[in-house]
Amino acid sequence: MKFSTKTRYGIRTMLEIASDETGNGILQKDIAERQELSIKYLDHIISALKAVGLINNVKGKKSGYQLSRKPAEISILDIHNAFENGICVIDCMSLNNNCNRSHKCKSQHFWRGLNNIVYDYFKNTSLADIMASEPDNF
Image (cartoon, rainbow, N blue to C red; front, side, top):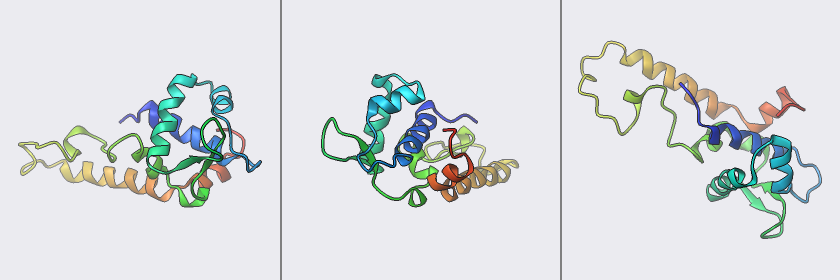
């Protein structure tokens, strides 16, 4: 199982924004520099996070970004869902997959259980949780 770079960088971006204490928001160029990301790639990350309402501009275009909610109210699942449609540990567990073996698959219960564990972990872990566990290492 592998999570996309957009999800991983999305989490790092959200942590950078959440760590801003100025009230003015954090500039995209500063996020890119600190996280060693290209501005162009970060544009895609920022756009997706804005589209689902997780972040907004403080004063309009070319201004800093801030969270739309408190870090404790934003789950890692919220961030993941900005980039991916749900969590799926193996292809046959995806909503779009019609496996012709599903009616006789003995391992299906195992994979569904693992998928639920990962889903619950993402859903029950907030930005605040990560910030509290790793305060300076995003």
